Amino acid sequence: MESSATRSADDVPAITGYSRREQIGWYFYDWGASAFSTTVVTVFLGPYLTAVTEQAADASGFVHLLGVPVLAGSFFPYVVSLSVLLQVFFLPILGALADYSHRKRQFLAFFAYFGAIATMAMYFLQGDRYLLGGGLFLIANVSFGAAFVFYNAFLPEIASSEDRDRVSSQGWALGYLGGGLLLALNLVFVQFLAEPLGVSTAHAIRISLLSAGLWWAIFTVIPLTRLKRRRSTKSLPPGDRYATVGFKQLARTFRALPSFPQTLLFLLAYLLYNDGIQTVITLSATFGAAELGLQTATLVQVILMVQFVAFGGALLFNKVADWFGTKRAILISLIIWLGVTVYTYAFLRTAVQFFVLAGFIAIVLGGSQALSRSLYSLMIPSGQEAEYFSLYEISERGTSWLGPLLFGLTLQFTGSYRFAILSIAVFFAAGTVLLFFVDARRAVLEAGNVAPARL
Image (cartoon, rainbow, N blue to C red; front, side):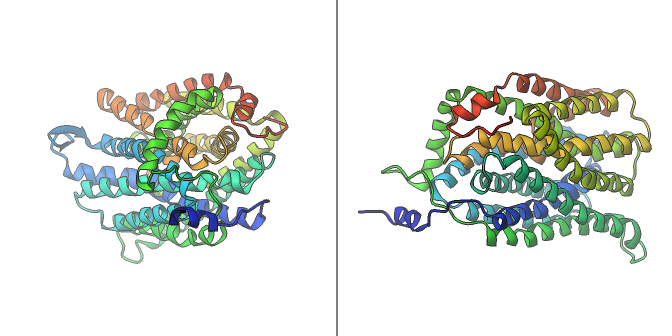
C-alpha cells in the first residue's frame, strides 16, 4: 500500500518544456531578495551595527562575549562567519529534503518570509543592543542562504543547457535593478528627506532596514505564483522519513562527490574565490567608513552606482561567455578581482578613487556570479539540484565565512584595514588557480548532462 507522501508526489503532474513566464517569475525573487544584500548587508548594517557595538564596548574598544574579548570593529565580520557556519550544517540537509519532497517552492516561501520578518525587526536595533542586531542578522542571513538554495535549484528546471547562461545572467541583472531601486529610494530618504522630516540619521537607517524586509516579502509573491511544482525524480526510500532522509542523503552526497572529480574541483574553486567576492561586498562599506572616513550617504551613492553598472556588467559577461566560453569569462573576471584587492591595499586613498574602483567591481560582479551559477548547474546530477546547490549556497552572496573571518582576525591582530583587505587576495588567487585546472566539459558529461556548444 502506498504511503500518503508517495501519493502526494505522484499527484504532481509531470512538466516538460520551458516557460518564459516561469523564467520571468523566477527573476523577480532576485529582484526582491537583493534588497537584503544591498540595503542591509552591503551598506547599512555593517557600519551601523559596528557603531552600536562600540556603544556597548569598554574603554579599550572591546565587547565581551562569554568572557572572550572581541574588538567592536570585528563583531560584524565574526557574525557573518557564524551565520555561514550554521548554514554548513543545515543547508545540505534542507537541500536533500527538498529533492525528495518536491517542495522547493514551499521551502523557498518559508525561508524567504522568515528572513524578511527578521530583517524588518532590525528596526528595533538601537542604543547598545548589539546582541539583538547580531541575532537578527544570524536569522536573516541563514534564511537568505536557505531560500537561495531552493531558488537556484529551479534553474535546471526552467532553462535548457544552451540557455542557462542567459537565464542566470538575466536573473542576476534584474536582482541588481531591484536592489538598486530600493537603495536609491533609501538614499533619497537618508540624505534629503530625513532631516527636514525631523528624523535622525540613525532612525532613517533603521527605517531603511525595515524597508528591505518589506521589499523582500512583497516581491516574493511573484515567483511563488509563477514557479510550478514538479514531480520529484527521487522517491523516499522504504522505512525512511522526511525528518531523517536529509541527514542520510547528506552523507551519501559527500561519499558521491569524488565520483564527480571535476565538479568537486569547481566547487572548491568557487568556495574560495566567492569567499573573496562576498567579503568585498559585505565589508566594503565598513572599509570605506573606517579607513577613508566616507559618510553613509557617500557609501550609499557608491553602492547604488555599483548596482546599476552591475546590471550592464552581468549582461556584458554573458556576451563574453558567448565569445570565449563560460569558464574563460569567469577567469577574466577573477583576474580583475585580484587586481582590485591589490590596488585597494597599495593605492586607494580618496573618495574619487573609491568610486572608480567600485566601477571596475561593478563590471565583473554580476558576471562572475551569474556565470558560476549557470556553469555549476550543468555539473550536477539531475534530480539532486537542491542538494548540490545547498553546498554551493554555503559560499553564495553574503554568506562567505572564511573571508570575513580572515578579515576580522587580520584587523584584530594588525589594527590595519589595508592589511585586512589584502588578505582577501589569497582567496582570488587560489580560486583562480583551481578553476584553471577544471575540465568543464568533462564535468558536465560526468554528471550525465548535455554539454552546450561552448563552455
